[in-house]
Length: 459
Image 1 (tube, helix red, strand yellow):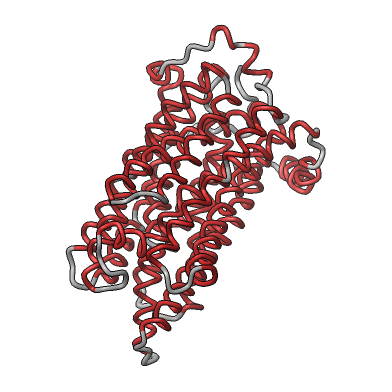
Image 2: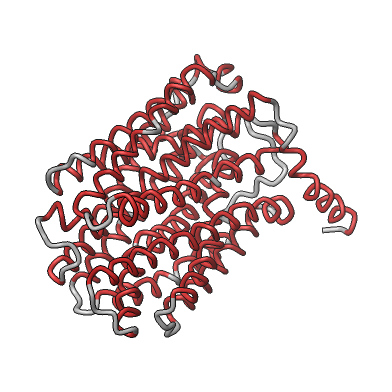
């Protein structure tokens, strides 16, 4: 890169934020609608991770916090997370194809209704099997909303503002995670303290809120002009993604999505489990033996650690903008995956004491890279495909990645539930998963990542 081109890039970076402020009112409306849809799908999708220590024992008829509930909670946390990922994958592919056929706006409306009603119904579940069915319905909507929202924003905003819009769109995910942690904490510690067997149900009842957004979308958002121009010929098929012209793009997008999702989901899914185990270790070190103080300490660890992970993810999301614009997509993936491996191997490999400040700091760094890199898929995957295949291609790459990813949380949860020291086993397995981002580095350097820097969306 020459000195002059570097200067031009630097000027573009300095002006990227003001440029975003020049979006039209309608473009901001579209971005806000998609942002809220994404935020609430993250909120509805991740509520279970926060209430699992209360929800699973209740549905299985076990005493919350008892030694007998520990192994089943780990097992079902992993299993239900994997079921959620499989449902997300199916919903992403099915609704992605639907989005290319009936339009982005109609699909967005349907997916929000799916996940909000599924989450609301989860609060009424009488047993673990009905609860699993409700989570499957929820997951179908969440997976479909990703593809529809990403395609709609990419097609509505101006070309030169696509990266900024995509990154802003993805900030909804850490905000949704913040909200999930906050709502769970409020019901468990403030609104219904001492009633963990009931409080988790009210947490799921809040999942109905996004249905109001679906109604607003029906009246405020129209189909993108790009899609309207090809509506009559919009008959996308998955097999087209493997035609000679798109095969390399599809396989490359799918490969890096698998690496990023497998890393993130295993880090995120077991935050409450690891935080609870470390809190109990800290309680023993402080000679705290009474049940209620221990439970309050556990909730503090869970909330603080989750907030730190999410705060890091929010910052990491925004940092993808200058990295992608200045260095390009390939080197962005190389940097984020390399730092993800280093962060995971240190966090779960070093003998870190059970100190809340230390662990929350480590999880902030994990969020910065492991969480942050996911935001790039909001603008990178739609860039790989033409309008006719955009939602199908982006939905396929991102959501089929979840099928492979689904094995990770299940295996970690199952293995941990079979060992006497479940906490240590979980940490050891997450250390091994820390090598997975290095595969992403290899894939990127090997040329599997199609560079889309400064390229226009294909019609």
